[in-house]
Amino acid sequence: MPDDTRYQRGRAKLKQMLGELGEQAVENIARISPDMAHYLVEFIFGDIHSRPGLDLKTREIAAVTALVTRGGVEPQLRAHLHGALNVGWSETEIIELMIELAAYTGFPAALNGLYAARDVFAERTAKSAR
Image (cartoon, rainbow, N blue to C red; front, side, top):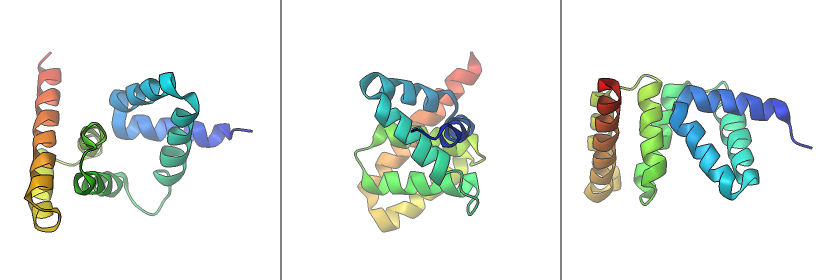
C-alpha cells in the first residue's frame, strides 16, 4: 500500500526545489512508468530531500557536484542547476563551483558542467524577459 504522506511531502519538496521543471520531469517519467515516477517523488524528494540534516542549498549543490562528476546526465544536471538557483545559489557561486570541480573531476567534466550552467542561465534570462 503506497504511503500518501511520503508522496505528498515529496511533491511539495520537488516543487520547492525544482519548480515547474521538476513537475514536468515527473510527468514525462510517469508517461513511461507511473511506478518509477512515484518512487522518484516518494523516495528522493519525500524521504531523502525532506530529511532535517542539510538545508536545500547544500542538498542541491551536492546533487550538482555528483552529476557533474558522473557525466552523461546533462538533463538531470540542468534540472538541478535550476534547483540550485531556486534555493539561493547565485550564478557566480555555480561558476566558482565548476572551477573548483575542475581540480577534482578534471577539466572535461567541469567544462560540461559550465556549459550546462551557461544554458540554464540563458533559459532563465530568456524566461524572465518574456
